[in-house]
Amino acid sequence: MRAHHLQAQQAKRRVALLSRAWSALSEAAVGDGLDERTVFALLPAFWESRVRRTVYQQDAELSPQQAVRDIREMCRLKWLVPQGQARGRYYVAGPAMRPIVESVRQSTSPYTKPYRQ
Image (cartoon, rainbow, N blue to C red):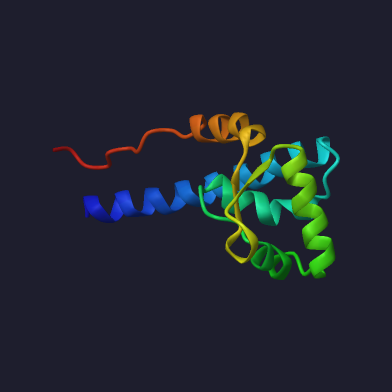
């Protein structure tokens, strides 16, 4: 049973982190003059995943030109950093995201132990 409780706590923590990350990224992005839709690109970078223009375009339901403009602006503001060239290009979290990542991740509490050893 202990494993089930830990697994439930992990799932609950992931949902809570996702919610806090979305809120913090949205607030900070809008504060920097970005549209709230850019969180669709910033959230995967927050989780240390690669961000690709085509995926962002589909997730945010944008035209290719708008997705390119958004990503270019996020790079200019240091939210994202480009990696690779041409068709292999992807983006990772930039220095502007570090304070948010640290604040959201520090807000987690340790797992509780529901059973005595």
